[in-house]
Image (spheres, rainbow, N blue to C red):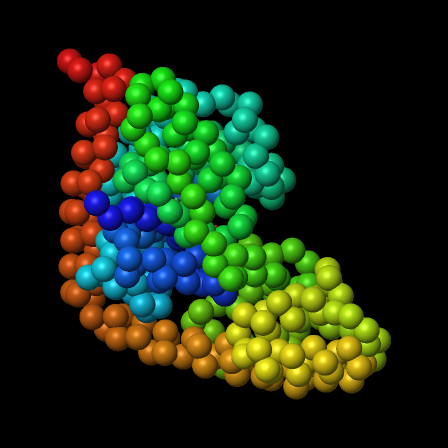
Amino acid sequence: MKKRVYSGIRATGRLHLGNYLGALKGMLALQDKYECIFSVVDLHTITVPYDPNTLKESVREIILDYLAVGLDPDKCYLEIQSKVPQHVELAYLLSTIYPVSRLEDLPTYKDKKAQYPKYVNMGLLYYPVLMAADVLLYKGELVPVGIDQEPHLEVMREIARKFNSMFGQTFPEPQRFKTEGEYVPSLTGKGKMSKSVEGSFITITDDFKTIRERLAAAPTDSGTEGGDLPKDSPVANLFTLLKLFVSDDVYKKFEQDYKEGDIRYVELKNVLAESIYKELKPIQDKRKEFLNNEKLVDEIIAEGIRKCTQMAEETIKEVREKMGFIY
Ligand code: TYM
């Protein structure tokens, strides 16, 4: 049997280069080899403030992004998490074997608590358990996600181990599938690229002008210092992005310029903007095709949900039985 792969993205707006390089590229690499399920995790989306009036549209946008980047419904199943209710059932069952204290300690929970102090809800605390259920529901072994998700993968493995030791071997211990862009830095020069930080991101649907503007706003230094590339600074972030989008030769040329105190950031940003746009343009064209073919997209979604429900039911039946729900 082919290994199973699962990944999901929240419907929190347009996908950015962090999502693209950290998650989507991994999904694309795996769809040819394994049985893959790629989801829009709408139940995770609602753990932070959201607008119920636009949820449907936001979910659809991610499905379109998935198809546009090249996820192929002939090779993988596209899922909308809430349409497969077994996720919630499994999450509840798994929550009974996992300590609350461990969840309270997770960095992602602490970050969100600090970000939305008036929105500290049970769902937020429960988030990693639901995420574990997402993957374990399909007995997923590989999870293409960015490095920021590693603590959640750790929880997933702990839950799998605990379940197996209490009720018998059932789940694999899922591993993260790493991509070259597992950590895409913010354009602001601080931290990672993130949808919730204005000025930090470029989305995959940005046009050339917008990409240039966003890069133009990214801070640099005077360009005359020379010496080794800095490790943790706005300039370091620009070079990290550069490495992800240009050839080795082009990268080395700018690195050399920097070392010699001769770097021209306008030139670097222009080259970077062109390279990013060159990669995104075919994606944007493909997205328009799917946007104009609603019926096809509806069919792809329906088929994904049908198949996922079948697979999910198999696992949940096994779990119910092992946990003693045999009446
Ligand atoms: P989400 O929606 O926050 O992010 C989606 C994916 O994008 C990656 N990512 C990044 N990668 C590199 N650099 C960045 N700056 C960057 N920003 C975001 C994330 O690592 C992620 O892969 N918890 C998940 C959603 C989820 C899930 C799952 C994922 C729910 N259930 C089951 C895998 C399996 C999340 O918050 O993703």
